[in-house]
Image (cartoon, rainbow, N blue to C red):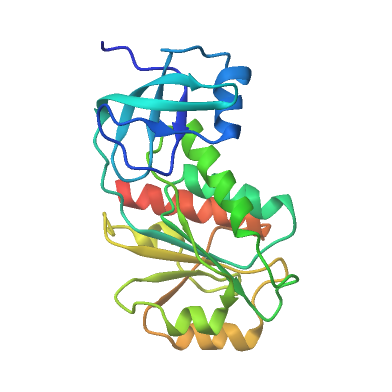
Length: 242
């Protein structure tokens, strides 16, 4: 059978032909009541490790259900490591960042507390849920790992110096990100986005002293934090394909 099922679902379980995967109650409700699938109807299923599979839906009792993988549709692709380091922002905006970062190929999200960060927490479970939903919708077979929130100096202290960190600096005399990142190909790279109020001058001095940090610009305008994250990841993706 060559036709690809219309719907896609993430499961956190190994996938292999003929081995049923139990679904939680929410997934059963979504497949059976929202999508109105019946026994034997097929969906695409992925877990971020074993590729994408065609799977058959089956009910178990009144509220239970399972997917049985039938055949492999696509192997798990290799992805270039793209790390987004960002100051957490309020409410739905951080979930929006998680969603769009997934669509744009980020492999790791790192919330970091800066001197001007307004909030000092990030709901990693909600971010993960939004990332999974985005992966289901956009056709990606993985979604970003989400790190625990830490102070910026801790993130920088643990950074692999072999990975360039493109620091989106609003301070003036810096090259455009697209030019600075040109030629990175599939090599690992990170981007650093500040809070709504921008980076503190002390932080800017510290960042510019680090050998792995590359100050860059995102254009002529001052962008909101969530817009800057999307713009930076888009430019990194463009640079990878250049």
